[in-house]
Length: 170
Image (tube, rainbow, N blue to C red; front, side):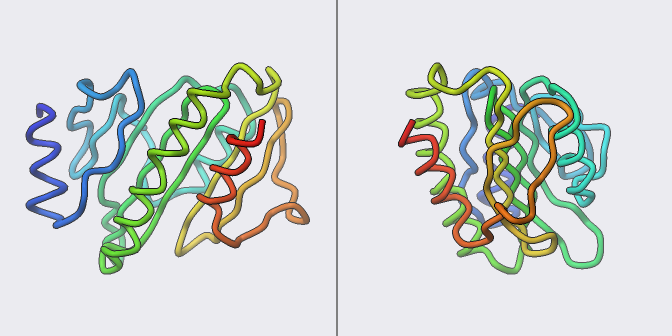
């Protein structure tokens, strides 16, 4: 499936804005599974967000972007991106289209701040950002591999804004 089909799927089928695609993946998004687009096949079910989180916390992970519909119970829009020291995961019910579009709009400035300030981030740090209706939300720096999520530092309020601020203030 080419980028036009990807755009058509989000705009026409899902009636959503296009999710932001970080460089260098702008023209490399393809259909990787049923209702799932990305730079690579995740080989995990999108609905199982904890599998993705455990992976980025436990070991270095190659960059990717994956997005689509997790069809388990309520259809869920998932957008997962790992780009260098940023691991960003959005998981929201398809019924909340306004909230999804707002999240997509908030992600582009996060990527811009990452591009501008990536060289200032310590080598063994990764900013973990989760905005999920089901799992809970938060934003925090993870150090080393294996790292761990510190529940005491896990602030569920406006994680996408927290991520933008964390990257912009480096």
